[in-house]
Image (cartoon, rainbow, N blue to C red; front, side, top):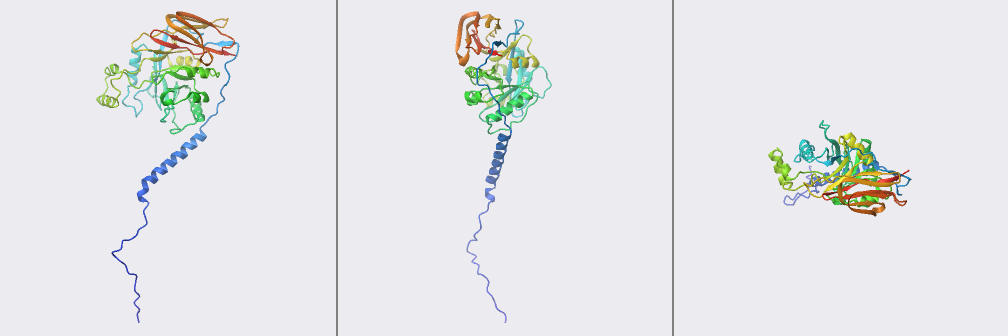
Length: 382
């Protein structure tokens, strides 16, 4: 006899209960995975790529004085621009070509210009301009500028870099032949005074920049016994409208510049630059001048003005700083430890100051009718 065992009764009207699927969260999982990879990567490079530097903490000492201008010869001067961005980088195709940049600066009396694009050294074989590049991709604009560097390298710290990481970057720049500058420190307060006092490896700071002029940080560092130089640059991104109209650039470039609100501006070009001695215009001689501090920083007050002339600065055997210039300045200031104004000479083209026992360094500021001129420090040495 066969038994009929009844099976389970299925209620077709009852909804089937399913476990929730994780598939709909796939984009969140991908995002979290990428974020985790980025976090691990960033932590790894922060811990591995770092360098500690012993920084001086006491003022310059010694009986001898180092004058970076002692060997200047001739009466001429060379105008040099050390911070300009071109269209060579793939994400800045709307900017100006190298030939346009060279042509405009030459027309304004510049002897040379450095092309300092983001993240790369220009590969164009052209010995007429100075090599360089600007490092840094972070939002806070903590960038570093390197002049004369042989090759660029990747920014390993796109999110965060400690002070030891920045020391490592600057050390690598110098090993590649670069002169290291902190650019636009006042832009987004990218480098505070306290931070610049705590990192090492840079040789100059942009105290004259379109993003803020400030010479006080020089005295903070010089008072610590750190021979940091001034720097003045246009940080060129776009020329004024009068220049752009003369360029034979494609329509698409005009459209992008217009949409990016880069047209119709007066621009900041040709206003901030350095001056080297007569004949110091090619990359090799300019780098020599940078390394020794044998240059001046200039800021013109308005475009089209006459270039303020730089002085001749000598130190005699009695440790007296003597200044002579072809231009009569509105004011000459001798500045010392912690920014103390040691002496002011108004309405003259000559001035002198005798080093006192308390003076660890002296730097000069000359205010002319059309612009201001800064010298690098004359400092005590063993």
